Every structure is written in C-alpha cells, then in structure tokens.
Image (cartoon, rainbow, N blue to C red):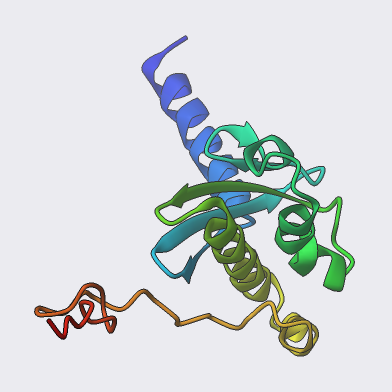
Length: 150
C-alpha cells in the first residue's frame, strides 16, 4: 500500500467514527454526594455501572433496579439504548437516583419531546438535599451535647 492509499483509508475510518459519535450522548446526574456520568449509545438495552451489570451492582435490590430503569420504561425505550455509567460518591441508593437523573437527561438530549413524559414520572427532578455540616460547640449539625445539672 502506498502512502496515499493509507491516508485515504484513515480519513474514511475517521469520518465513519464521527457519524457513530453523533449518536452517543452523555449527561450527568447528581443526588446528595453521588455523581453519575452516563453515556447513552444505540444498543440492546444493556446497562453497565462501574464495569458491572447494573443488577449485580445494586445487589439485585428490586426498588433500585426499578429506579434505574424508570426513565427507559416511562418512554418505552427499554431495548433501544445501552448505558455506560460511572458512579462515584454517596451510597448505592443515592447513586441509583443519580443514575436515574443522568439517564433521563441523556434521553432529553436524544429527543426533547420526551420532556413532558419524563417530567411527569419524576425522572428530571434533582433532589437537592445534602447532609448539613457539623457546627462547633455541637455534637452534630444541630444536636447539642447533653445538659448536666450537677
């Protein structure tokens, strides 16, 4: 192969990759101290969280599994997209809620017409509650030390 043929071949593969990349969508979901970075791509409905299958990751807890799948089930796109998720911080429960928000935001980037359906099911609501910081002169954020009379 000559140098010209090699350069033509590489330009074709680069342009093919660009068309594939346009279908890939990413979004971020947060809850408490948990952050979930979600990447959606066309596929068979496989969800991988931190390198594990999502059911294995949440220890087959049915409430969390349904929470993660809620955005897909509400818009009937169960077996259309693959999701690759990197979840950091918080516990498994708050990570599941962050993943739900991240998937819903990514689906909005795919088609903005889904906003009303995802909004009604509560998938686009960011839960802002966080743990309050500990204050000085107190045991925790608000609890004071036990009062001693004598």
